[in-house]
Length: 380
Ligand code: IPM
Ligand code: MG
Image 1 (cartoon, rainbow, N blue to C red):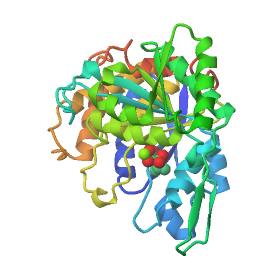
Image 2 (cartoon, rainbow, N blue to C red; image 1 turned 180 degrees about the horizontal axis):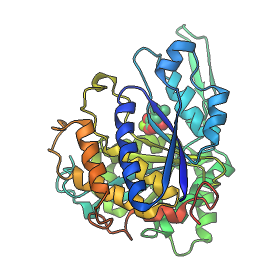
Image 3 (cartoon, rainbow, N blue to C red; image 1 turned 30 degrees about the vertical axis):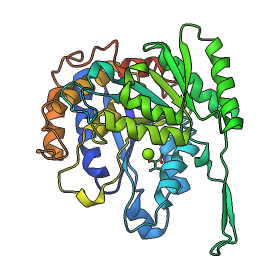
Image 4 (cartoon, rainbow, N blue to C red; image 1 turned 180 degrees about the vertical axis):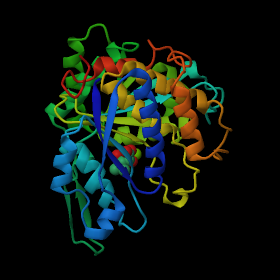
């Protein structure tokens, strides 16, 4: 029996609440589809930092590298200064594990109400591919005359050919397995250096993928197009900060952060990919049972797809989407985190994997097809 070895960083706030439910549904899928799951918990996040001042230690990082994939809950805590865990743990892991790609699906599932009036599931099914290790997140910079009226901050943005190629290459492979359209989102009219590098690489790699049509949209215009005409897009590839911003807009379209899933992927496949809900740790509702576990479950489904378990991933998606359609509208979940998680896990056992989403049109199928072809990727 194939066994997938998962590292689990449940993290802070609602992170552990939703991660327990994601693992419950993964185990149900493993039982049904005949594979094994082993898990190892990593003590990283706010408590660890408060205890011994460590955001990410070398031993944990080396340990994490040895797993097939990583599930991350959420990190962040009001007792920890802003940025310490965001940069010191989440971004540090993305960079250390060379996760040049962050996959952020924007899919409105049937029965979910979008704040965008009249938006239908048929019109809202795109994927944002965000470069995940560079741009302004690379973090270089300095401040002179700090604390005075002359304080001046310089924050540099880094765009390397290697990471941009890795990201754009993955985006084209994903588009080829989907509706064969790719849109570069940038701000090439202002950020002329980075913009030219991105455009050049899209042209170069696009040349090898004549079957995929590609075009370009400025990041600010994207914020208009996304809510008004999301059907225009299939795969949107963009830089780190633009991706951070437009993916929150995308999350809103699809019914909020309770639904938004993501995967941090190393297209070379020589380190484990890491899957996490887009939402934060929401410390105010931790342990109250009010967190929606669907985003964590869908992230775990993406993880299974990347490990080559396409059928299991489709079943997880179908189960989560069908339970989602039964939840009350609006921010009040009307059900507990564990209640929703149990319903999903129950349904995974017998749901038709094509019940809600056509498997050929599901991101899970495209993720399996685009998965790195390595021992860890499992894509064959
Ligand atoms: C996200 C978050 C992160 C980011 C933070 C937590 C580092 O906003 O995953 O979108 O800025 O990338
Ligand atoms: Mg964000």
